[in-house]
Image (cartoon, rainbow, N blue to C red; front, side, top):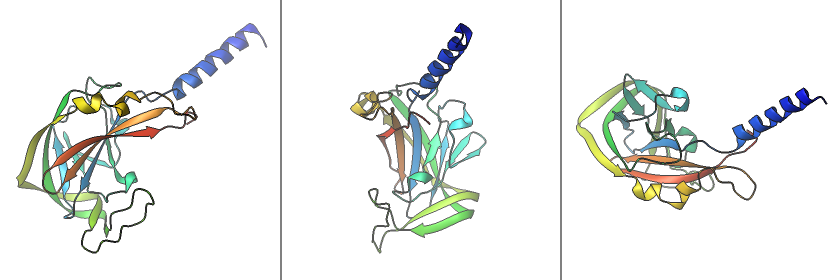
Length: 203
């Protein structure tokens, strides 16, 4: 192997491990847990202008539209970009959320199901509580009496062990990520929490 070949090989190895080493930033997710099938429209959210993060989100101008989901159905979370000027391993101290509820219709996928058990993924037998999953809805009828502005304090989450774990590795050597999840409920309440994730370092 020539010196030039060895140099190219070394660069490739370094690049490979650098790309697989650790998550660069947290992930922002949102869910709407609604027995009535409401959607939520987010206004003026200060996020990075990078659409590679979006998943299960409908964009309408500057508005971000979040569809309702069934609790425990993790693949239907809405995924958003990190916050503007906070694209790394730190959250802002607080976020002001401006949001409005909407009645959805003309949805290409809409069904009712029981909430799922996070451990088994199976429906929880509950005859009185059911939730909706709706996607690609043609009509969002905004509810003028369901507009909210709330300040979410993120300082405690920012200083938590879960946030500190971002970019470290577990016992298997896989990088640990972190998700900031906003949960919207029918009564207008919104809660924020963190979850750690594990990334396959070879993917």
